[in-house]
Image 1 (cartoon, rainbow, N blue to C red):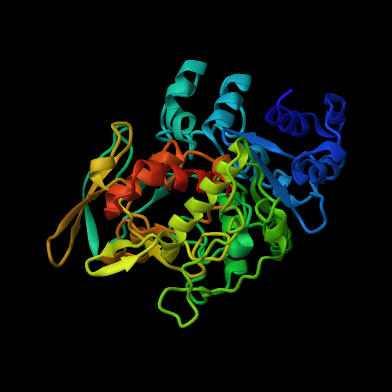
Image 2 (cartoon, rainbow, N blue to C red):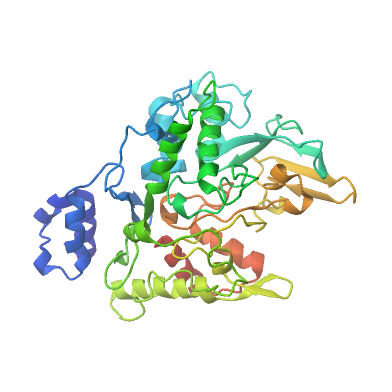
Length: 452
C-alpha cells in the first residue's frame, strides 16, 4: 500500500484505518497521527467531506453541531429548511453533483425543486420527471437559485429589453440566477448576499443584523413562511452560522494541510482575528500578505514536498503578483480578497470583474439591456448586481467579494456558477486584468486555491 493510499484510507475508513497497517509510530507525516484522534469522534456535519481536490472539514467551538437549531428545521410551508440549500457535504451551499443526486433519487420532488425560485421560470411545466428535468436545468447544471428583482421607477436607469429564453423576465421581475453563498465562515464577512441587499442600509457595519435579515428573507421567500420568523429564531440561526468554520483539510498531493508548519484546515479559523474594515487597501496598516497559511512550505524535493512548494508558491502569487486593476492603478488578488487568511472583503465593497458581461452570456441565460435615463448610455448584462439595490448606474454588475476558504468543496464559481473549475476562474482573471500568468504560475495559483 502506497503512502498516498494509506492517507486516503485513513480519511475514508476513520479510526479503523489502522487495520490497513497505519501505525502512528511508523508514520512519515505527523498529520497521520494527528488526524486519527480527530476521526475517532467524527461528526456527520463536521466530518471529512470528499471533493475533487481532497477533503474539506468543518469545525465549531464546541466540536459538535446541534441539529435541533432552527437552521435544520422546517420554518415555512413547503418542506424546506436552511439546510435544504446549504449542505455540509457541499461546502454549506449547493453543488451540481449534489443537486443531481437529489433529483435522481426523488424524481425532482425533493423540497429543493420548487418552481417559484429553482425553475428557470416559475410558470414552467413540472408535471413529469422529464418536464422537471427541463424546468430545473440551470439548477442541475450550475446549482443556481432564481432571484426575482424589479427595475424600479426611481432608478437612474430603465430596462430597454429582456432576452429571456424562458419568456418570463420583465422590468417587474428580472430573473437572476445566483449561487447560494455558503453559510459558514460568516464571522468574517463585510456584506450579506451577493448584492449586499440584506446589509442594513442605516448601519452597514451591523453584519449580525444583516444575517438576521437574510435568514428571515430566505425563510419567507424561499421556504414560504406565512409571516416573518421570530427574532429569537433568527438569533439562533445566526449563532449557528457564525460559529461554523470550513476549510480544505487534506489535499490529494500535498497531504494534510495543517502539518509541517502549515496552518490549513478549519480549526485555526476558530481563533482567526477579524474586525470590519481591517486590512483595507489604502489604510496605513494594509498588507498584501493576506494569506500566511503555507509560508513554511517553501522547501524540499520529495513528491509530496514538491506539491507543498507549489501551494506555497501559489500563495505568494496570490499575495504579491501585481497587475493593473484600473488605468494606472496596480493591485493584487489580495487587494480585493483582503481579509487575513479568509480572503473575503472586510467591508461593503463590491466590484465589477466582468462576470456579467454580455460576451460571457450562455445561450440558456437571460440577457438584459439597460439605458441611463439622463445620458442615454446603454449597457447589457446578465445580472446588474448591486445596481438593482441602489438604483445607481455606477453599481452596474458589482458583486461582493466572497471568502475563499473551502473553495474546492463548492464548485462551480462566480455568482452565476459560470466557472466550472478554479482553473477557469484563474483564466478569467488573467484575461480580465492582463496578468500575463505563465502556465506554471496558473497551476501554482490553482493549487493554492484548492488548498484553502
